[in-house]
Length: 184
Image 1 (tube, one colour):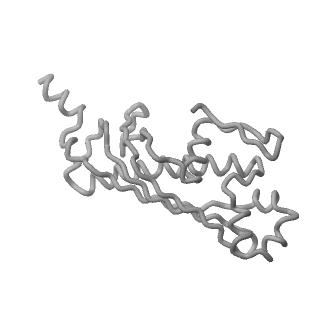
Image 2 (spheres, rainbow, N blue to C red):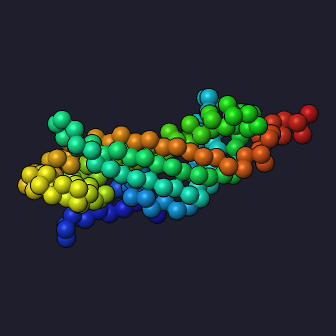
Image 3 (cartoon, rainbow, N blue to C red):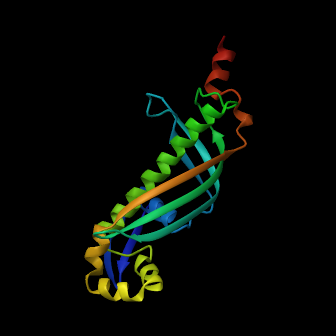
């Protein structure tokens, strides 16, 4: 997938690049399995990346009425296994694993934010938020419906991602440290 084309009714609303479309997939709870690369914690080199295979993701999106406008609350629970790392973190210690989990969570949050911002800029309800509001409070929906595009454009997103990394014991030593040992 290199991106998405978004339609509004029968007209083209816009295009999303790869990261924005991945963010939209996260928000729509459509990520069933993927490999995600992420920067190693505390690494100054941008090319210093690790990878995690996501095998389970559960994402719940809820519109919440605020004093001025709605906000969407996103709660994501993600599980995966580390498939490659060059990190110097000690993966036998929870501190090292927690740093890696935070890096993964930040990448997922960034993708979600990019997807939401792109959809919001197009003023397209790709998450079905209007339907969620209508199901919970039909009177509120009738009040919002005439200006729904503007209300959608004002919505903020508050997201929380909980990452669970399993099977990290295979990386007791990073590849880079093993290379150093063989060079000596």
